[in-house]
Length: 94
Image 1 (cartoon, rainbow, N blue to C red):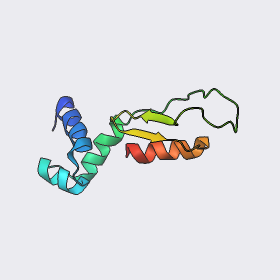
Image 2: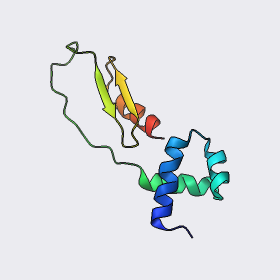
Image 3: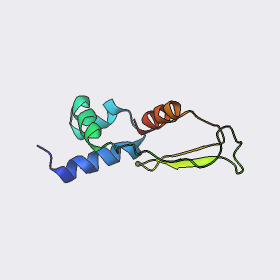
Image 4: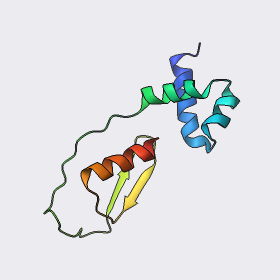
């Protein structure tokens, strides 16, 4: 059985590997379902944030940058409704 540290290393390595889940799991001798389970236990929790400004007001700057827990960044000048932004974050973290 893998230690906590080894699980953490494998999960973090997957995020930067550029490999598919199947390729990465095979390389490390674990089942895809095991990798998925370990990843699900390490997913960062979403937190509620307050956005200042008037609803419908155009942003004064180039948009926003959202840095995710895994180091990925989302930059956009688009406006998102809260459920759409939450769905975007979940997709990017997957």
